[in-house]
Amino acid sequence: MSANIILTKPRSQHEVRISPDQSDAHFSVVELRKVKTGQLVTSHYILTADAAQWIGMYEKDGYKQEAER
Image 1: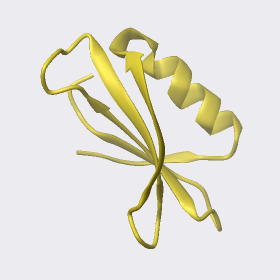
Image 2: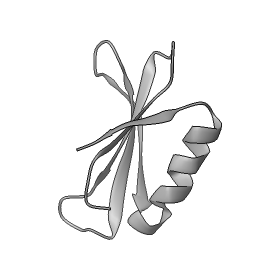
Image 3: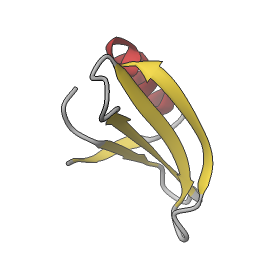
């Protein structure tokens, strides 16, 4: 994964951002942020190889991939 991924859900106050760790490409950071303020709610440090599973988990909860940056 070389791009930042943003997942949004209609009428949700949160968005999910998944981005590769800058110092080690084997890891990625998953952040749950408030849409209005950008305030960090929680974050997870995961293996980049597991990113697809995390995306799938959020998609099952109604989130959709908004953009790749």
